[in-house]
Image (cartoon, rainbow over all chains, first blue to last red; front, side, top):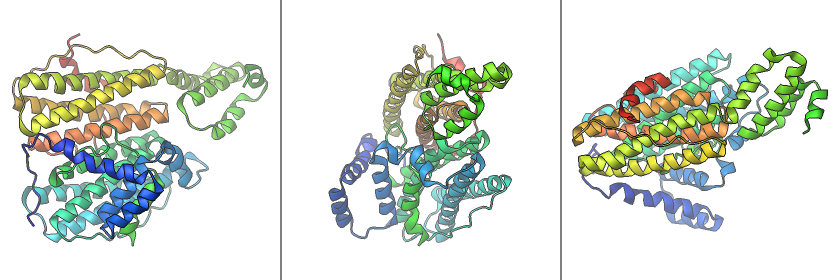
Length: 238
Length: 218
């Protein structure tokens, strides 16, 4: 299997056609019965599919499952704005640790070369700076930074890894978007927004490698609640 | 809740304790704050009230609507750029398919922003006339990169000033798409998809106008 490359495809229909699969998953997961049927069909497909599946299920649910109110409900009960922001920072830190571990594994795998390898190395370095920034923000609030969960990621082939990276980055972007409304401190909000769009850039860049949609949610990115994201990352915490 | 009831209570305490129970929802919270603030002003004097009043007034149209109209202007610009200028220049390949997709998405952003601005009771700005000094695919893509990356900075710079949390999420939902556009365009022209590194830089309004201003004719 050849490694993916950053091809500048001349296909004009590409974007329209890759949007279809996400829509199908969303329609399937609306109904409990269909959801079980889908799971049966999907069999034991890997972590990437599971993550995409959970995210699609969350995204297609009613507003209440993906808005700030649900995220707030599932977060630690805050008695002050500090403790609410602290919980959000540690949640983000956990996700960034996972992304950093993922990229470390990918970059050590030797599965990529040239421009693609360089790009993935850059992204891994950026996730690391996110870890440092979030750790610092937690400490500034007088909190204890979450521990590195030392995530486990399958790294088998260039294609499989790139597809997993696509899911992980899309999840990260959705996670930040899901918390923006909950953040009390304007300073922490500004940091979260600055990271949020970088995760989106990562996702779009990897989309070009795996010929998937730059914008899987269409013109408006969907926020993901904390509970949804925690469910989606479960396979990596095993 | 009647005005009489509020003025008889200790308004600041009432505002704080009941605020915790009120679901965060842009207009509801602001009108509550405003009523509490006005009552507080009569007891504590205006200086204690000003921050709350300006926040509430901002929510009823001043602050959030103004920010969204600023965003709307940028979306008009991007939409015209992709949908009109893009056709004039004559694009091919990936550039052409990006322009088509992004142009559709910017138009969706326009529609959404206009709707929200009207919901706030404010008037969406009219579409200006734009001039884009590009004549071929290469210069078109270079400008696309500038515009999309500026858009990301504009939204990230303005978003923390939004008073409505729901509007903040909506703005975030849009800026995420602009960031995806920016990354794709940059890769296409062999620039880094993350030109600011790990953290996108928020831009001030004047920084944004320095980039976009020259393109706005009327």
